[in-house]
Length: 204
Image (cartoon, rainbow, N blue to C red; front, side):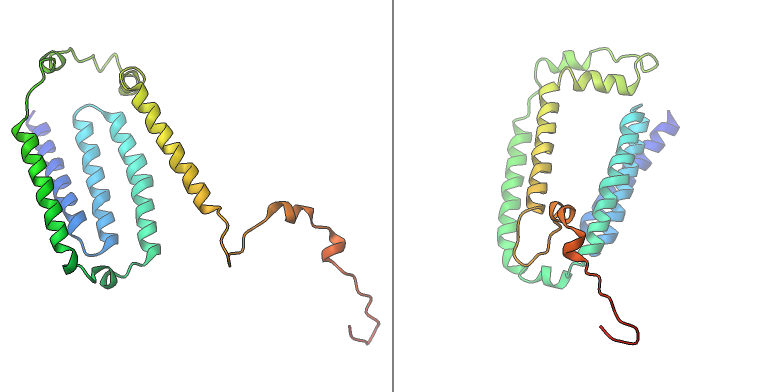
């Protein structure tokens, strides 16, 4: 238990510190690298709770795909930080006002916090034996029974986002050359290639 507690505090401390470095770094590439470190420590916390499948998904999906995509996008955009900081002072009052509104909402939420009567029964529900029920089976049983409609709604949202990205990418724009595959396939050799009989010691 002592080793598990030390590992928990180690992973949690590094995760919190790395998350703080993500929002305080001036360099966007360094911020993404700190984000990757936060993902790894979050995966370590999932391993300590016995959710190895979720930890593997966090490393493969978020570290191996999302964070790397963020890194590539940040490196290719070549953002001008000086230009982005122009006019920052003008927006400070609005930022402070929004911050106070969010703080007031959090205080109201915490002040009116109450424990639901059914929460005690849910907390006392028996945990399935991890040796008999793997993480994948337990996660699938929850997703496709209790959260089936929410799972389908999330898939629908992702589908709409994918279709929107495709429509925005393939829209017609002036001055942009676009590949037209049917025209390329319909091209004939006679229309594009001309054979010229050049006499010896002569020019074309």
